[in-house]
Length: 185
Image 1 (spheres, rainbow, N blue to C red):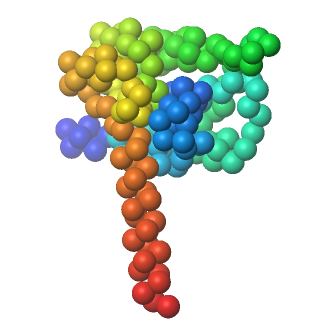
Image 2 (cartoon, one colour):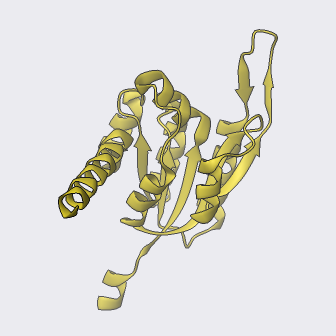
């Protein structure tokens, strides 16, 4: 019995990169998110067994992708298309949902799903997770996350985590550390 209480939950992490980046950029003028902050918070919930980030094909690298690889998160490049007005679209949402549904129905060892996005298109997936007696947590930008996503999570007693709170916590901790180091000099 005690062994089951100490068992870490197995987590499947799915990141809608473009949705998350655009939310940060449009709301807070932040160009990138800190994947280490997200991974650290998810690891408080359990062990990441599956991690995937869905990235538009026009993004090819950078420090965030390197950090994702170091954290065991697999980049999935999504076909992108656009028009002469530079409006870009990609298949990231669809690919994420297909992979997440596959995990939900074929990987019974997964206890909890973590979705990094605020898109209301994921509500039917959240409800499928509930129907399969699994857990879900969403990490998003509260100011841009669809209210219906938060309401759906609340309805079933699951967590919404505002990334900006995580981001601020890390910035505050870094400030405290640099202040303490300054005291030593």
